[in-house]
Length: 200
Image 1: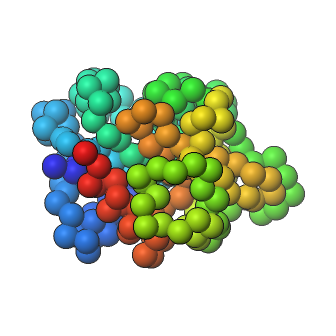
Image 2: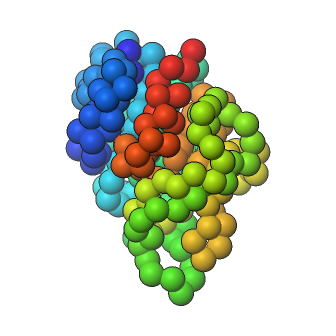
């Protein structure tokens, strides 16, 4: 089963509709017991890092998530959900994340309009099943003021440019994170979600 974590900060129904479009079995869950039954996990999120992290802790699902991640179950973080995978974020002060992918979340430092809202290209840095049937330099839909800054280049799957290059797709072992919203990114985004939901 593909599960979408409901911790009250996600755009869940757009994501569920995207998966339903491809007839991919999925379920929105807000209970630790349901997470323990998951074959793949999606962690969406919108808004600010610290409240999202706090809601995840309050949900009572964090221990179950950690257990599944340690056991090797694939997890995809989306937007703020991807940022939570990092060690910390500087949004509204320094806040601790899940620490599952080494690195930080930083605010854009340039003169362009912040947040970045709209379509941007993703340059694939290495082959990965997540990019199966997704052409290089495809456009995806972004809404964010902060971006991922992984410690190790080996964890960067995709780069985008907004004032400067930043990591828009990351991976460490069974963990993936995308800064954009695949559920709002038309065919390329739907294909990426389908790829994740068929990982074995």
